[in-house]
Image 1: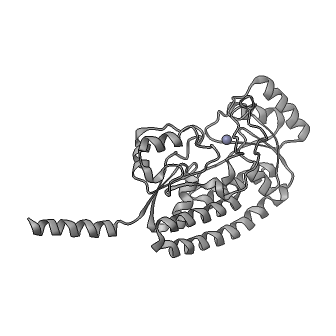
Image 2 (image 1 turned 180 degrees about the vertical axis):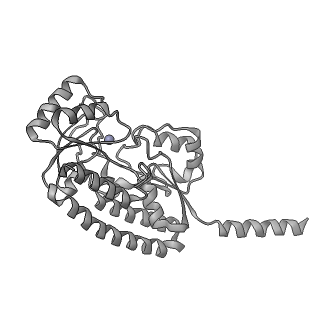
Image 3 (image 1 turned 135 degrees about the horizontal axis):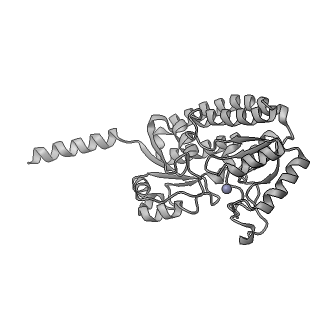
Length: 301
Ligand SMILES: [Zn+2]
């Protein structure tokens, strides 16, 4: 009996040593990809939202609660992007390690400088984000800042692997620098070009690459288009010679296509997460895809 106990104890000990990988859950697939790139084989990472889902609206289903229950680290975009579902998953999981404010909780927005922080948040302005626009991952510079923050956090939770994480980060940053040069080069001919978007997703992207927003199809963030607003937008688009309408796969396409027909602008369905389209395998190929989509539409090809 004693012998069996000893064997069992040894087995348990060795398996727990062997199985020491950090279990990370992220709200969205862009963050999961960054964790994967800087964590390598030392982490197990799972995104809660599917890359086909609008990140504002995700069902807090039981299978997601189970993932949060098992996590050592919970990583979110923050700035209220996931306000409708992440807090619910966290409390339902009962996992004290990853609750907001605990060691295993990471809000990535603390790494970046927010855009569009309203002077005064007001419900009548629609579904505004009182902390600013949360779609900051479309500025590649921000993805680098987020990668650094994730590495700092993972190194605190898992100090014996800190060196490896920092080595992976250096490789990520190197690749980001090279890719940034090519993205900037590909979009350089379109500096100052005007665009319209379905939802207000692109202020960070636009600022980085020198594009200018002329309005949104949603009259207010999260509010479906209306005939009056769409008619106004057509006038604005004609006046400003808007050449491109940026949208995401989860929005209806009817309004974008009708605007395109009436103004001559091209519709580009953008990719906010790796995995949304087969070409976007990771953050880098996702940005390659977006840059190509915008360049193609604006070049008139
Ligand atoms: Zn939004």
